[in-house]
View 1 (cartoon, protein in one colour):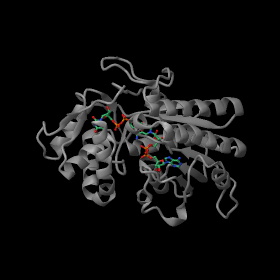
View 2 (view 1 turned 90 degrees about the vertical axis):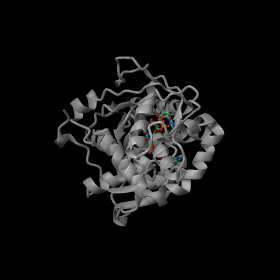
View 3 (view 1 turned 180 degrees about the vertical axis):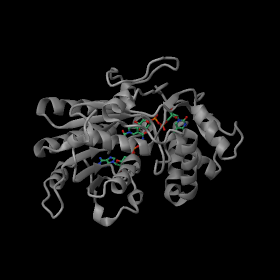
View 4 (view 1 turned 45 degrees about the vertical axis):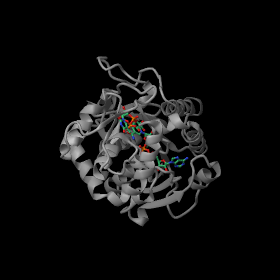
Length: 348
Ligand code: NAD
Ligand code: TDX
């Protein structure tokens, strides 16, 4: 196991996509757990980004930059800035177009942000010898059949299904190449499906919760038999920190918390917890090419880095998430109608 004494100790992180769901949770996590670190957030504030996700972060801990990771001049100005702050010594790269259904409608922003944007950041890391941690997804490995006894490991072949997952797979390959060819100090984490606060209402769990809170019937794709491996976003954040500070350079780590449930099981849990009848939902079109099952073997990060998920009671996690959406209507309501309209046009 990597020794604490060998740990990389960042002083100033460039967190891309820090106003999105997982990026914002990560910023809150670092601000809370690691008081001596400054964070520069670079975020384009797309439909998925929201400055309000960072409310409560003290001004002296964070510099917020509204800008695009594809803007090489802007990225260069950030990583070469001279100020009273320590220079940026690591990039933690969350920024992405992240939603499969959107990628099926229009892949172009996915190729730009997920591939070109990652390239721009890798080049900045190369020029300035920065540590680079890339946030990726288990979707790069394609899917498993429902009865497959295996789970994904770090040696599973890349087999992405959607424009989104193909663009994430491409970005992983760039990261690996920049390590091997140029010696950039990279790591990658490929995580399973996250849930928790500040997740956009387009995603499965928040969509169903906010539908119920809005008097709209939840929508299940197909028969709801597809399986996702759920992890609390807080556990994902602690895993990213573990890999950033103690991961072996050039390596990939899978992150998951043994949380496999079918979509219909998750929906039934939400309905029950929100006092709805078990059949109070609609079946809608399935996703074209939709992945059947994801399942993560997180043995490597556990063995090598001693990381363990802390929030493994999924029912309790759902309760907390439902409560968060109940008490944060102002946060999600502005995005709700346009999201549902987009889904209606897709037959979802
Ligand atoms: P999200 O869509 O909630 O947030 C993405 C953020 O990136 C937003 O704040 C957005 O404004 C920003 N952004 C988008 N394009 C940008 C650009 N060109 N320049 C600067 N900022 C830009 O996504 P998320 O769910 O928080 O996912 C974060 C990362 O984690 C992604 O790389 C995603 O692939 C990965 N991931 C997500 C999950 C999940 O379950 N959500 C699971 C595994 C991996
Ligand atoms: O309304 C819905 N009904 C439904 O049945 C929605 C929005 C989804 N679904 C199904 C489709 C999937 O089988 O639920 C499952 C989960 O869907 P999403 O929330 O869109 O997540 P997924 O496609 O699995 O991808 C997520 O996890 C991996 C994130 O969005 C990605 O960014 C991450 O890489």
